[in-house]
Image (cartoon, rainbow, N blue to C red; front, side):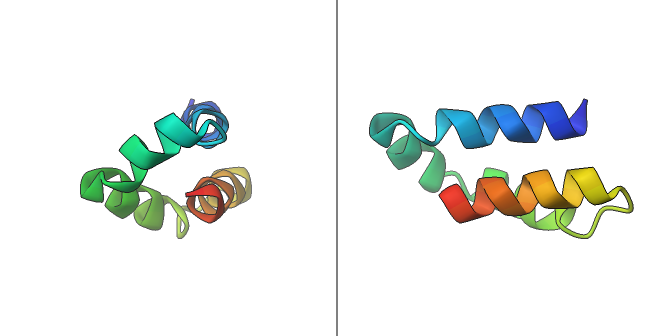
Length: 54
């Protein structure tokens, strides 16, 4: 579920209007940073991808 949620965030961020909204969310950025050190490799990768897009 975490990985799929992170993929959804990354996909939403491809739209410029959505990206502008997501970038201003400090809580989202903090959550993504926490997930980059998750024990599951696929969650780490999805979080890093979402952060890179933002």
